[in-house]
Image (tube, rainbow, N blue to C red; front, top):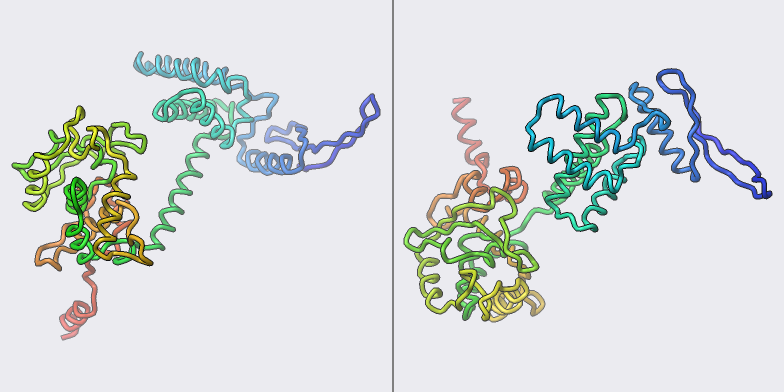
Length: 388
């Protein structure tokens, strides 16, 4: 198995060169594959070497194309008596979305990069993000079926997902190293008091609700009066407004939640309800025209001026420039209410209040804020109990 340069002269007298991957597969058959660039030949050589050693290599000359593999996949689904609706969806994905873009490609040419480009093509041609996810899922199942039949050496969709998971894990690790700090990322209690004292007009009820419920800015902008139960002191999150002011579902299933609040928030919202502009969407915090309020207005006309007026500044500029700082405060307040004479909430409850999709997300973000049970005094007591 080798990579070598090949040179030749065309009939017109031009000098040409290419790079050839020369190898013998697991069945003892010799193959030659030609590439214009050495780096492409080296990459193919490394890939083939691994596949041959694993006994799964499929030569391009014997590789089916995506359309053929798609038809075979659908036949297999029919043979396994899958539901008619499922088979109908598979067929639509193959015929209407997969084949038009990559149907003629050999399975051996499908890799993580081609899957990524395919995703981009789908979006460019009007497929929604939700539809793109479903189509890529079907492509992954198609490739898995082809692997079982020995038509494909690898599943490029799984490779791409594995790379993305690794990237997300690394991102989470980087975030953990840069822990949120009180007074830098998370407002101090005295700073919150100052912000509340200096919040005016329609921004006051919005900021107070953000501080004491931890709602994301998008959830505040999409909050409806029918989802606020002032008599029960709780609000229900069922929708959000995106950065384009479009109303839609929360970020995840966990985003739909019930968040309780106290008398201070309840009284503030009761007063605000009397002055709130009318809104076709029944919005709690609409703009003056009754439409979805923009995030920029909330920050630049509400959060920032409230800080500057109260002296919560750094270099004469507002110390906290995003609404997420108030969400961070709410999380820390839930975790450490002991400072206020109350009990801190358990991690699982904090996760539910924040609408995190997993407890891992809560711990990654706020784990260092939870009270520890292994401080020096408790260790001293444990040691004495053991040795005495």
